[in-house]
Image (cartoon, rainbow, N blue to C red):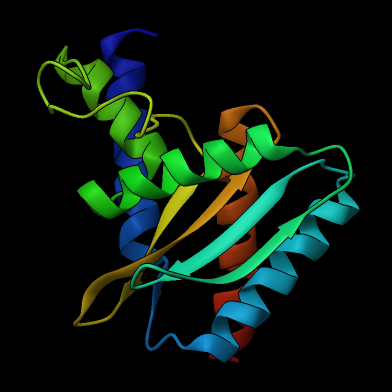
Length: 161
């Protein structure tokens, strides 16, 4: 991917993170978002594992047939990246690539514990910052990311009405 395309994708990630912010987020919201994410995955027949965590506590987790423990490992790595950088795991990957940096050498993060692939997204609350993450694994990584984005767009639109 060339620099101009990377720059455009970075801009898109930043816009998603700025616009997909919750006015508040609690256990009931985690359940609703998780169920909507699962519903969206089911409609796509996506063999994914999904998880929502707040302040280090797993609030929602569902694994579809076809997903395995391997996907849960990816959830953990994506969640760790969101927690560390408070941006999406896809955003982190594009940022490293655009800057010519290395996860291990420059950010001092173990690639066995941190993923720079799509499928981890921060839960930001207006005025409070990042309080958790929504993760998905089982599709090609950019589709994992898009499944979360589509779900959050739908959920936040429903809440505004």
